[in-house]
Image 1: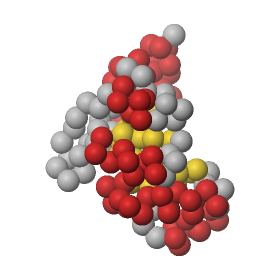
Image 2: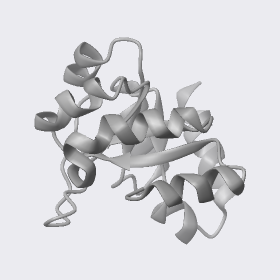
Image 3: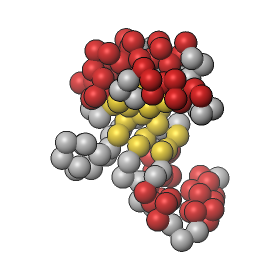
Image 4: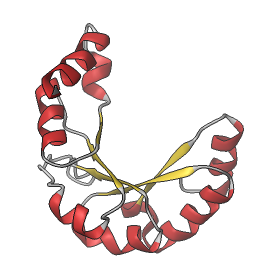
Length: 140
């Protein structure tokens, strides 16, 4: 989301949440979060590193994602949940990007993330249902 009109489009299309990328919005993150909530949309506030925590805190983020992929270099890191849990004790923490296998997703969940965002690996999977089933089976 980079424009108020996109929030209106999300609302009109029946969305329940919107992605706010702190690296893009910076100090405007809180205003976009407020505008999203006013429309009944929950913002998923995405960070790329811990220097962006203050913007997400100012936005009152309840869904906090950490993108393991640095969008300026496309390099992957391995973010940890610990520092995020300290900064956002009551938030749902979401590990994003770089989860290529069900085992990657399981490791993120075991490391303290509450949820994972799986995109490319799920789309490329020959059997997405099996992919998701293997994640859940490995956690039981």
